[in-house]
Length: 293
Image 1 (cartoon, rainbow, N blue to C red):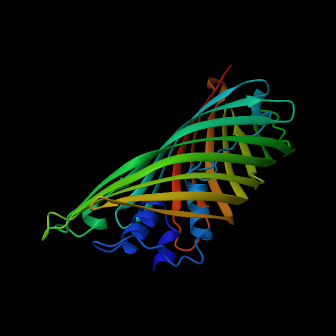
Image 2 (image 1 turned 45 degrees about the vertical axis):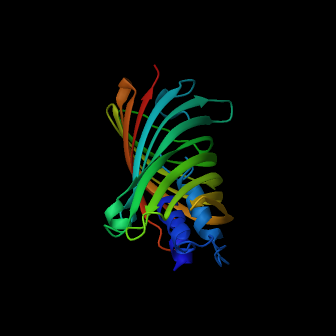
């Protein structure tokens, strides 16, 4: 049971491990986690910009973008089940280079929890979910450059994308007071750090009509995630600590449709991202962009 839960995000994985491995009035015991690499790799990828957002169609030299910086806003959400979810927000800056594009991203993770669904009402639990901070960089190198001539045209594009990301997370604080023995109380803090990397080849079909470009795209990737979680508990004044760490390679697949609105420089995209792991969920995201003139 613990192993399956670990393949979820921080709110589910770490809170469940904390509670399932502790007993009232006793020490927190190191759990028998022989195979937590997959779950913690999934956590690392989905709590860093590498896998926390839907992919964007960034295509070097498309429609005069050479030499122009772009500003991006990204929003995504991922339901983790059992009353928990992640809401991610980020701002990014894409800078043209001699080899292609570099994108820098900084963002926030908002961990959302439903106390009543995670813990039975009246059992003495008080849950305060926290937030995480993440940053990353992506390098895009063109493999197949599109050519769009005339008012109406279409083309295909392929790029090589290499991504790196990291995050630090104050996931949650759990307080417990025994309803039948108020003298017994527990406070648990869950924190964690992650870093990740991925390599992929985004494939795009570009359709131009007048001053509007529509770009459906597909991004297969292979990602590597490494996460370390620390669970600190104070049980009747006795401080205990449990650390979990793991790393693994995970396949990833993103898809979406972007629309660029002519010379205004504005773009809008809707997409999904999937990091493949046992019981993993699909992330849904919206991307906004503005290209400098």
